Amino acid sequence: MIDRAGKIKYVIAGSASEIVIPDISQYRVAPDRLRGLRCVHTHLAREPLTKDDLSDLALLRLDMMAAVTMSDDGRPDQIHAGHIIPENEGRAPYRMLQPLPPHGMDIGFLKMIRAIESELSRSRILRQSGQKTDRALIINATFAPKESVETSLDELTELAATSGIEVADRIIQRRKKMDPKFVMGLGKLQEAAITALSKGASLIIFDQELSPSQVRSIADVIELKVIDRTQLILDIFAQRAKSREGKIQVELAQLQYLLPRLATKNRAMSRLTGGIGARGPGETKLEINRRRAREKIQRLQKDLSKVKKQRRQQKAKRKKNELPTISIVGYTNAGKSTLLNSLTKSDVMVENKLFATLDPSSRRLKLPRDTNVIITDTVGFIRDLPKELAKAFRSTLEEVESADILLHVIDISNPRYEEQMESVEKILLDFNLNPSLSIRVLNKQDKINEKRLWEIQRKLSGIPISAWDASTLSPLVSKMETELIKIKETNEYSSDKR
Image (cartoon, rainbow, N blue to C red; front, side, top):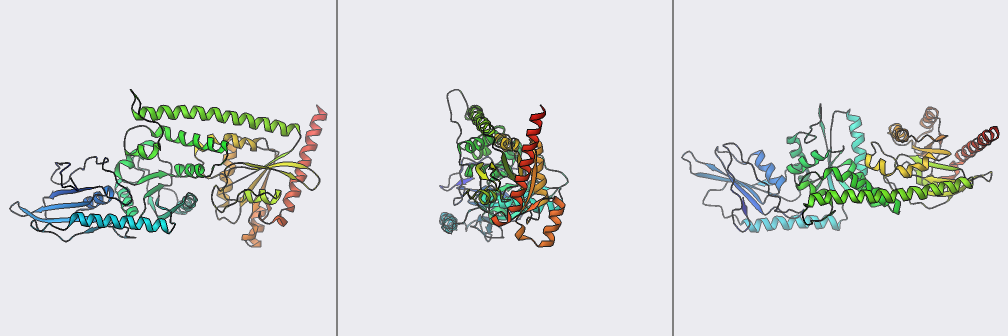
């Protein structure tokens, strides 16, 4: 292993068939920079660069990979070399040079490497000036049915877009069982990393939660940043939380996700810790990271307890004023905030993105018969809600627990509406949230034909609306008011009976 000054930094003794490249992580790389090291080794047979050679070249982002072959009498015969090339959409991210004789190796190496890095830098600037986002390769290694996998990857693509990430490509690997170490096979993982490089992707996103040991194993094999579905959702929440309560909940969830992954010192750690902790006397950085993470979690849990106390006081005040409460729940991007705006003529932020709004919003609504209610838009739900987020947002969902009526907004224009509806109802069940009445609100009726709408309405026993069109909400408002009167009469009857 030789650096750009021509100094030999490592000498590797391999077998007749392979060499093992040592840890070279101290030689940093960047999207527009190579490693600063070239690998020169021997091939005892007269063969060009092997697949393993080219994989190491691409994955480690070496300046160059070269193999010296031997003549029959044991003398150097030819030098086979290859180097990385800038983004090469759909093709291999490297180029093979013509074989060189031992006496003709002056190829202007430094000038060539500088030109490659200049092109890498130019490509990066062009992407930024064109306002393109980071690019990612998304992966699902699974034994689930193909249709289900495609649906899951479609949602992951939407999550990536919400986080400002462009999906360069997707990979599905069919497996009978998951690889406990790499999720997918090692060879397939290396191929995926090379595919990512060839498409200009700097990030790989797995469509399942990776265990701490899997994160470390994968990070030891490839140089690209690797995250899972849970971490992506946490990143989105971190970007979009605005209130103090929301920020506390998100930070708490991130730390709870991070803590078990601070298990060893390796290259994965720098990608996960994000600057928490620092070196101190008598302690390693890893120990400080763990200790400070635990301390921060305790502080955030105390802060969250205070928020819950304030929320209980607010609920007690509403109860004293005898104001009924209605909570809006539903899958993310089903139209909850739009419905709140149309009902109350408010201006809660609305975007056609997953998790456009995270912080709950409450508004007062006056119904036609002069009944005043508090209506609350809660955070959107999602399939396989990360357990860290589920725990952190428990206090927010207590609004649902105390609601007199629950409006379950369902996007019936989405082909996956039944699966989304079941995910929401499962989360409510997991939290033991059983309000006295739940009304299914069939949103986006304007996006499907009348026959399909009639079939869905009969199947789900819901009320069809278009949340953006206030003129379609009359049946829903009438249903809400009728049910509130029934609840009031029932409560009064129970009180008289006592």
